[in-house]
Amino acid sequence: MLRSKIAGIGMYVPEHVVTNNDLLKYMETSDEWIQERTGIKERRYAHRTEETTTTMGVEAAKIAIQRANTTADEIDFIVFATLSPDYYFPGCGVLLQRALHMKEIGALDVRNQCSGFVYALSVADQFIKTGMYKNILVVGAEKHSFGLDLTTRGRNVSVIFGDGAGAVVLQPTENIEQGILSTHLHSDGNSAEILAMYNPGTHANHWGDKNYASFDDAEIANMFMSKKMIDNAELFPFMDGPSVFKKAIVKFPEVIMEALNKNGYQTTDITTLIPHQANLRIAQFVQQKLGLRDDQVYNNIQHYGNTTAASVPIALCEAWEKGKIKKGDLVCLAAFGSGFTWASALLKW
Ligand code: ACO
Image (cartoon, rainbow, N blue to C red; front, side, top):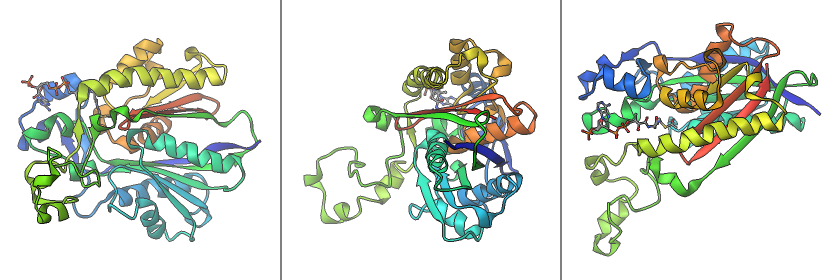
């Protein structure tokens, strides 16, 4: 049976560094509050008009493709994970296909928020293992800065997020000592509204009450996108932070243990755990619960904030570039986020 291996990896973050103190221009907050609650010191914001989720994904993809010793022309499938696409539709996959002048290959968009990259990797893994494709580009990218409420009203959410992209090229290998050993995907939609951006959407309850009988025709006609939504700040993400925290610290360890148990490993066997960079406090809690040493966990949220679908490939790429991940290492990727969805992937580098 074939296995998938990461043949090349790349990352891109915008040049513009936004420190916690820089956020004081927009809102009442403090470096102390942000660092204490999240561990974040700074994040990157994309150029407002020249950079998009796709352009950042393209930059990361170019590096991954080159490091995989292949070309954009040889890629036979794209899986693109993001919650901040350039357009409501079409998705970023086709925009990346166009930007890289690729052949008329399949392009799939994954909408699993913070778990998006691990879900995307799992999808790509299945196509490689069955022999259907030989060079799959998997991208996670986000331009959060464009869609955050950068006022005091939105500060509990907006200080956490940053922009960036990461990408890998998956290829088949017959070497059983290398590649993705297993992936594990989960969801629980009961808490879908706890961490969500409701609008624009087709749910039709963004008016704050459900007494539609009182709406006039114009209001009903404009339910998808209305001035009222803008006035009431209903076009920004919502997060019940404490509820997210409580669920994350249970599901992260669970899905990591699931991957280890499936393959007969123990926590001591992990060379590097790359947790989704949700919040440094969550990662530290998970580390403690699993009894992992500092050198077994790689975190970089301090410098990039939470980049959602991009956070796992950015952290994996940076850890690899710093020489912290070497051939033969046991690497565990784990993510948890909106949905709720959570996922893990265990791989031999
Ligand atoms: N700066 C200063 N004060 C703030 C800020 C801010 N940026 N944001 C909120 N506050 C204030 C609030 O107004 C509130 O003040 P009050 O007590 O006078 O009313 C106080 O701080 C506490 O507010 P909470 O929203 O309850 O903040 P909490 O202590 O829960 O911390 C946080 C928020 C950091 C998000 C926390 O809930 C948390 O760590 N949650 C985990 C969720 C998470 O990390 N999500 C990441 C994204 S999702 C994902 O990737 C899975």
